[in-house]
Length: 509
Image (cartoon, rainbow, N blue to C red; front, top):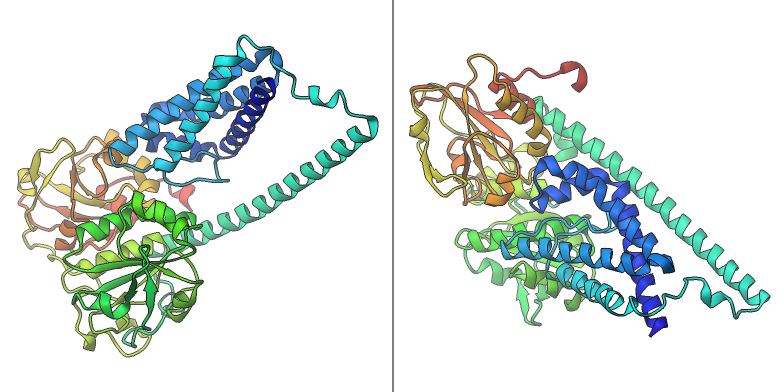
């Protein structure tokens, strides 16, 4: 029994040591994870630092015989706290990123995450139950009966293990540096877009097969073993959005809850098919967890290569007549925009083929958003606020209103959130009232901490499309008479400028 308890202590110590170090290396991500799990923003900063410290303290205590029982008790308390937090969010239908092991491993929390923590809590409970009355063996006690040569062999093995771990750490740092470089490139492209500039069409608009060409056919097995073809998906008479994914791709996993929601909420308008790779066993748990349908498995990447999709997640629109209806959308944000454009009136899902173009020209991309022009009455609408009470746009007649289209899961929205909250706290003279039309869940929107009214558009960007908005963040100014008083502003700088927010130009230059 003493050996079993020692093994249990070593297992728990290893888990908490890795988790604590990984969280400490990414404190910003740890704090964001706490906010995603529902911790108030004012508490997430101190708790985001205390949590990895507590995990490291538990790991050290488990290794020392004199403190082993107290370390097990601390491990049990932390694990039960994790179980309660994960279970609470799962019951509410939320799957926040667990950030369990920092940047080493981070994925949306699911039932498997809950089970893993329950198993570890059981192990800690066994140590707490039996370790109090039984002397705790030392971690190095097993070296005593070994000869000198055997101890040298063990030492050499430990040195090799440390070298392997160091090599892995260096590889991780190189990959992290590459990731940071890609994020900088993405940020530069975003700032160009916010400034009204576009990446040259020869670079940004040529991914995938040419618009208007025949989509490559396929016949792939589903998770139940049945074969589904592209022709069968098209037989429903609706556009087909083909999304290429991979069970080992982190961004793909993070997008799965949205894919499941798209399949449920827009089933009458389009077909969303997920083409993954790997075994049924590798794909079934996540498909079941998020209620996914139309999950097809390619043997390797043969279908993705046929569509010239070199990365995941990526997506392309196939029109009901079997032709390519869009350029390749690469990345989660691009896929969301593709869905919005497909669902919008007169968008990709409804354009006649004559408007699509025959090659890779600019006609493959929809033109500027079309909405009411300045001086025209703003379309009235009614949406529920975060308490469920319905609010009409006409309720704001008599005052200038900034109508902001928002998505809590949008990275660009998150980056301007603090500026928006600062503007709310100290609005300039003559500033308009703010009315936010958002998507995602009530909890996600409550976590933002905005003071202004937030209305939920459960049909994605349905209200936004009435005003010509196809993405987030975008905003338009409405005068006291309920008429459009500005052009549609796209991107954080343009939205904040429309609100009259004074930005620190030296900091952003």
